Image 1: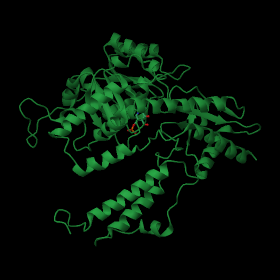
Image 2: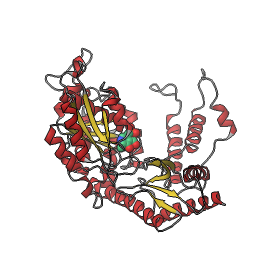
Image 3: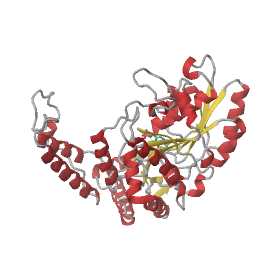
Image 4: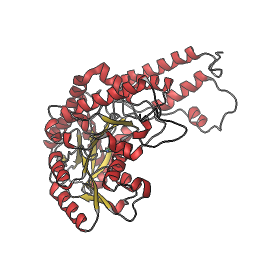
Length: 467
Ligand SMILES: Cc1ncc(COP(=O)(O)O)c(C=O)c1O
């Protein structure tokens, strides 16, 4: 028994077991598996046990935990194509274990940790070509978007932080396909859902800047203060990138904060195929990027970058007697929403340091190629219909075999059949009210050949449903 960890008699043996379990998991992620694992009955029963008062066997607990995880759906598997997954990069997982071992306090002065945090911000800014490296690591796109909108609200409606809105009205402008986290953030800022102007999109599913311009002018005429334009750089549904340069023009003309929600798409900003879509990014006041999506690191790890660090401090700076400031210096928590937070930047720092930016960009280019390849194959097959050309790596499409009435129901059932089959994992979605299958390639383990396997599985299961 060790003095510092009296509950754990043999720490090294348990660590060795953890290493074995993790190594086995990584090996199982290298190739798709034919079926998802299911929990055995005995373990299922143990998950209903009441709180144990007596100590349990650590090796048994570790083993059970690993079995539960193995029977859970993991986006680290190469043919997990639902929602927006990640890759569960091993470098990130190892950094995560190290970070939680040290459990640094990032609210107050964290000594060396702050230098690493700062370097990770600079590397992220460089990786995407955003010229400002101030900001913060957060626990997700939701929190990054909220943090940005709180700062934008304080800039547009000064004193709102202290005195509330005092009857003032504000509005936020975005695409009708913006992620719900934008609406939720607006709700939390106290502006109310009704102040979200969810605007129409063009044929490429990008918000129309002239509508943003007109909506701002109309609001101003009504005495409503424009708080922020939120451009989506990679919509969740189809991966469309709003026209950033045109939106920056509108934002500048009206003196409105421009936030770019690039939670999903921003990692593609400096790839050869993606770069043209991101022209104008450098003019944004703030940008969100989720490293736990297309940069492959394990959840959670999001980055908010801002043009003006002072805007964060104006919204979050405070003085308390339990955490004094050293002179004029700010504490890290003076620019973030979260007090206690994990050392998320370490995961991205490790991934960038070990793999380098070029490899990550090459992986991202490959995901985009996968989406284009899938789109081409399906487009050439009369039994399928693609619902948009992929701009990044997401694609929505329908199976529409001859003589099948009720394509919505058919595609819903097909998605269920694919999930039950287990070789490929994708989820249904709806584009303009039409139920479809949606895939999003963000996993660096997915190979070119596996994209063809995806088509084969969907064809096979689709045909079976129509027989
Ligand atoms: C465009 C966009 N913004 C924000 C979010 C929310 O991110 P998170 O789940 O990390 O909070 C998502 C999630 O998919 C997203 O796609």
